[in-house]
Image 1 (cartoon, rainbow, N blue to C red):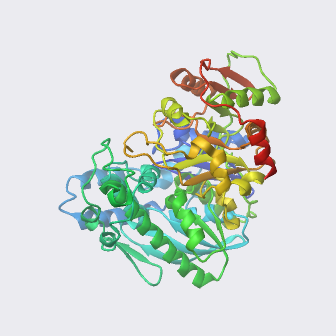
Image 2: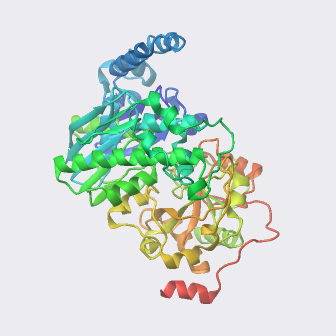
Image 3: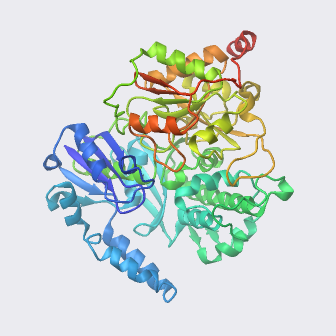
Length: 586
């Protein structure tokens, strides 16, 4: 049985293919078109998924869209009419976009993919996200919490998963919802909206929630776990807006002078966390279960996940990779496959379900074995250089998890500046996105037992252990932020680790282990292998072009190694043997 899931006509269009209940391919369309947050119909992604299985469209048993277009149209029509006459400019555009073939999506989907219309199915977007969160988890039974934008009306969903079934327990219907609140707040502060929630979260780290009282008039949290958003009060609650590209007012100041923009972001993040905790407590009251599966756009925010685990009633948390639109395509396929009688898939232990490396036909370097590739990468990293690491199938989300990663030595004094030169922007002034061998993680970081699952996908923020702060050295030293995040220096206080399993990813695990043997610290900074305004690289040619345009010292692509500029003055040295021995023996 083959089921193809899609997200289309919205940001981050994608396709995913399930065979006999097992997810075998996920493809974000932006990787092919090279347009970030691609919203066009995912034609190339569909072709890639079918090619992975070696099948033709007519062999599909079902094609399922992670949306019910008629219900989405009704909600948006109501929203436009509610805003009238203020919406008189947008209303014609809205009608034109829907009264074409988008509203009658069945025939459009059938024609685009090449299947008969009777094989086209629809599942509402919240259920698709719930399916992605639960069916990828190791839980036989679990509570499910989903928070995302109001596609068909529901913005937050409380559900229970049991085996191959998902039961919806309650829904919050709101015009904007929690994700909408975050997106509007991000736009108020000069960001792009939901696409920039990650940058918005980082800005919140620089402030204090001094506007929590004002936000209480925007987000009302009820005793039954529901909430209501009054978006028209948001601008007054947040204070003066910020123009896109302008500097952040006082970002990173002291607690009594943190700056209005950073404080506004921190206040919104606190409110979002409070609302999610309220929903989680109600969900626990209804289910009595100990495991929580969390999906939707807000599940990509590591600080919210940390609060759910630390302050919520559940003992264990599961957050899948790419829990937003890309995951919804896969969730729609998994849900439809279960409805059609397929067995439940094995738990997801990695995110490497996207495309393979596409190598250049014109080989410009001799192949090297794995040992030589790792040796050269470690030498470069120990000398303070940057390494592009590209092998196997790509990650499905935007988190760099070791297959399309830009790597740096966290103990190098200038790794932030080097990364900013390479990718065009680095704004992680307070956090350290990194990878660590799973068996060494507890030694270095305060990872709660119930959070090891999301930590596998860098979806949880934790603190370094006291003795690890010295080892991490420059990674935690006070630094000024780049881009618009200008202000006083700040010390990193949290880590966003990826736990690397030797069984799942032996190549990347071997690199981390070898680096740890040389330096005493088996931790590498890891960011997506791409410019900050572009999708993750897909082809060797993309990576070579990145190397030519940037400060990348070494590029490893499967068995090929491409050297960049020679390092003339290394900025960091390997740890001395005494220090390394002290770390290993602790």
